[in-house]
Each structure stands twice: as C-alpha cells, then as structure tokens.
Image (cartoon, rainbow, N blue to C red; front, side, top):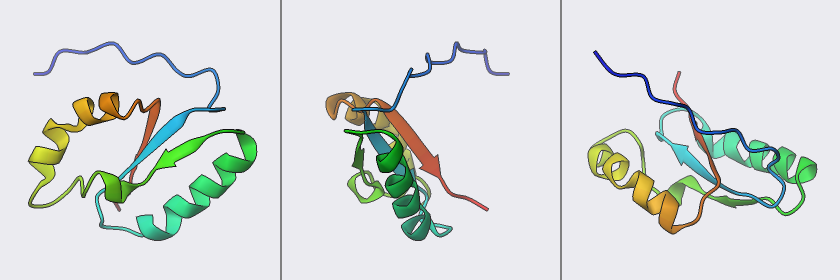
Length: 88
C-alpha cells in the first residue's frame, strides 16, 4: 500500500505565475495545450508557460529519468504549477 500524503496548497490565483505543461505525447496535446494557454492568458495577466518540449515525454523510453528528475527541474525553473496531460 501507499501512504497518503498531504496535497499541496492551492494557488490563490494564476496571475503572474509560471506554469509547466507536461505531456505524454499520446493524445492531441499539441492541439489542446495552445488552447489552454490562450484561455488562461486571457484570464490571468502575467501568466507564463514552459512548454512540454522543455521536459520531454512523460510516457515512453525516457519516462523514468524524466519523472525522477522532474521535481528538481520544476524547482530549478521556479515553476508555480503544472498542467499534465493527456491520455485517453
């Protein structure tokens, strides 16, 4: 079994925050992430994005290395939040 862990606190707003986008390269992320970015940019001034190609695929031959180094990379890049997708 896995021990439950406390969830991170929610951000009060995405205004001025840096958002990382993670993708498994399986289902239409290249189409969907730009829509999400456009809509969030309208709603939250100053929001910025790090795109999925900065991180590599979260599914596939390098997924273990990518996931293992993800927390450190997100910290180093001063990311405030993550959008992770897409599967089907």
